[in-house]
Structure formats: structure tokens, C-alpha cells
Image 1: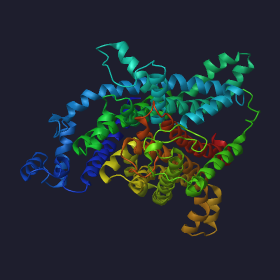
Image 2 (image 1 turned 120 degrees about the vertical axis):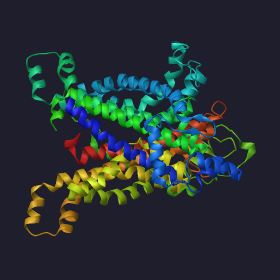
Image 3 (image 1 turned 60 degrees about the vertical axis):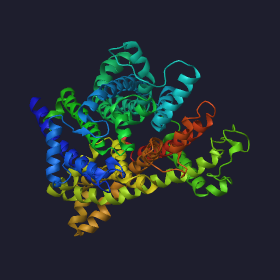
Length: 314
Length: 276
């Protein structure tokens, strides 16, 4: 088991390095002088020269890359020239919001999606199955940002039930914190719940065919007991894998949802930086979100090995 | 657990419904000026925020432009970006996957490892990063999406090639002296058709969603080009006075995405019953 986990971890290192090269290279492809892009066209030559020096823009690219990578490894993402604040600290301030949103959305997706799939897969072809299939198909087709707008329109503005924007830190008021995150989490979770529902249904249908389920039914066990004691534990393997992938997807979706609900997370920080052409910040947040995405996939892979011993042998 | 009862709609029905939706929308987009006589960009201040009527069933936006006319014209952008990005990804990713799967070994590693790096980013994040570097516009959205899609297409083709290579009929063709191009194009590649077709349909659905998202966020299509995402961004400010400005463009996105998803689902179950 430890060997398997260690091997997976080792495989993650070249992937991370590759991601850093992509992010670094991409930002160097920006047309024009990066210093002028950051400072604007009205910048004085002195300011441009100072920035070029501060960012070491006159050095060869490989040297620039290694210097940047060396800093990133130590958690030093450099200074944001607009805010005059270390980028690492800015990310650290906003990361908890994104992580909490993602975790809450994951819980919502699992709590909605898995029962939806069980409902359908348990009775193939029945009314519940057709309903859950239809919900799943519509669910994966709803644009998340539109769902967010509709929820704001109907729930916040229409019924006046939940807040449509803003964020309250958990330490200030746990209740307010959760209330402000309900709509964003549901928005982020909806399409993922649909994906999970479809997959759970497929996993259940696949398991129901197996001999041990036929045996359990033959010995007279009730449908419900068969479903929960024999089918679900075996169907759980693909469900966990896909849940992991969905968490990663939500890290990307958080950019959209944080923007709609004005949450101060890393996603919105990324978009703001993109719109302001603040490339040092874009470079850092894209790498951080990408690394988190990879980390989640890595943990899922390892978990997969824990649940299913056969995977470890490969 | 009555497995022997077939789902009444049947995979063929689902696929054909999806195809019908997709073709209808494509036809509407192509014939846009004939379908909606009104201009999508003509501004008339006295009609601003007018509620839906029989003549203008989707209402008017804040500048007095017809929402229906804009939705129909925006489909041109949506479907154009989807078609362009998927076609480009097939052209780029198809040969890469084919070579990687057929050659295996070092060549395979050389092709697939860099593509793995691209796939290690969440799709929308990579698309936003690309847009931030290269700027906005219809063509650039399509190219950014094609970059995101290329590794996915390569993986699907590679997997199909790997699976087909060990089939007995391929060995047979080789024993009969088929040349490598003939072996690959005539006997191995046709096996990739079904998974690629299904994947292409899924990618079209995602492309429509991502284009709308990017445009909504301000890093996609540039105004005044009518785009469903841009319309939603504009409509947000008038949500309470003119809910039709956000309701109809959203439903329009959903209809197109649903069409492609149904097509993909139906095709998968219909052409490849074993996988469902």
C-alpha cells in the first residue's frame, strides 16, 4: 500500500514541473513588453526599467524560470506590483473561501447525486429510473452561471430568502458563513450531482448483474437489504473515483461561481487578474489551482487503491 | 431490478431526438436573417426593456434590441465555436493519438506525457489562461478550446487504437501482407469512429457551455457580436425589471447543450451497447 502511494506521489512530480513550465511559458507569450503591459502605456521609462529589474526580465528565460520556480517552491510567488503585496499572502487569504465552497459543493453533489442514482439503478426502466435519467440529462446541460443567476433572481430577490452576494468568515459567525455559501454551493454542485447520479446508476446496474447479488436475492434477502449491503459497497469504487474528478472540476467552476456571488476566493482573484492583465498574479493563481486539481486527483488515485486492493497490484 | 424491461424511449430514440434538436438549431442559426427579420444590433431607445409580446416573444433588452433576434444570431457564434474547436481538436489530436497508440513505447510517452500536463489543468481554467494571453474574439475562443480538447481527443483515439490492435482480424490482415497505412487506416482506425463520434458530441456540448461562460466572464466573444454569454452578462443588471433578458438566453444555451448531450448518450448506448 505504501509503495503504491509513494509511486503515485513520485509520478506527480514531473507532472507538476510540466504544469509550471506551461504556466510560465504561457505568460511569456503575452505580446509586447511584460513591463509595459503591467504598468500601462503611460509608464515612465524609469518605472519600466525598475520593474524589469525587479522581475529580472533582462535575464535569459531559463534563468527567469528557475528563479521563479525556486521562489514558488518556498511559497514565495513574488510581489504584486499593483497592490504592492506579496502574491503568496494574497492567495493564502483567499484560499480558505475557495476550499470551503468546494467542500460544501462536494457534499451537496454527493448527497443529491448518489441517492438519485440509487433511485434509478435500483429499478431499471421504472418511472423513478426514467425521472432520474431525465434529471441527470437536464442537470449536466444547465449552464452553472445561469443557474446561479436564476437562483439569485428567484430565491434571493424574489423570495428574499438567502443572500445573493458577500462572504462572512466562519470564525466571525458560523451561521452567517454557511447561509452565504448555500446558493453558491448549490450552483456549483448541480451539474456535478447530475454526473454523479448518472454514474451511480451505471455502477449499480453493473453490480446488480454479478453472481453474489443474484445469490443474495436467491436466499431471500429483501431488495432494500441487497441494495445497501451488497450492491452499494461494490458500486462505491467507481463512485469515489468520479467524485474525486468532480472536486477537481469544481475548482475550475469556482471561478465562475465566485464571480457571480462576489465571493473573495482564488477563482475571482484569477479572473480579476486576467481582466486587469496582471500577469504575475494570473501565473501564480493558475498554478495554485492547477496544483490543487492535481492533488485532489492524486488523493483519489490513492484512495482508489485503499478501497480496491486489485488496483495496487498494477 | 427488472432488467428485461427496456427503457421505452430507447437509445435510438434519444439519439434521434438529440439529432433533431441539434439540426433544428443549426438550421435556425444558418437561416437566422430569414427566421428573425429584425436586426440583432439595431438600437431603439423607446423599445428598451419592453416585456415579451406576440411580435417579440422574448422581449427587448436594455438598448431596445430584440432578445429573440439576438438569441438566434448568437447561436451562430455558439455553434460556430463548438464546430470549429471540435474540428480543430480532431485534426490535431486524432493523428497524435493514432501514432501514440500504434507505436507505443518511447513515441507514445513522447506524445502523451506533454498532453497529460495540459489535461492536468481544469478545462475552464486553462481556457481562461489562454484567453488572457491571446486576447478575446470568436476565433481565439475556438482555438483556446481546441487546445483544451486536443489531449482528450488524442486519449480517446489512442485507447481505441490500442484495443483494436490486438484483434484477430488485424493480425489476419497483417498476415495477408497489408501495409502499415492500409492496416491503420483500413482496419484499426474505423474502430475509433464510435468513441470519437460520441466524444465529439460531448465536446460540442461542453464547448457551447464554455464559450458562454467565457463570454459571460468577459474573456470570450467581444461585444457587439451577439453571444449568449454576453447577453446574460448584460441582463444581470436588469434582472428585476426585465427577467426575460436572463431567462431566454439561458434556456437557449440549455437547449443546445441538452441536444448534444442527448445525441452523445443515445449514440453511446446505440452503437456500443456493452459500455452502458
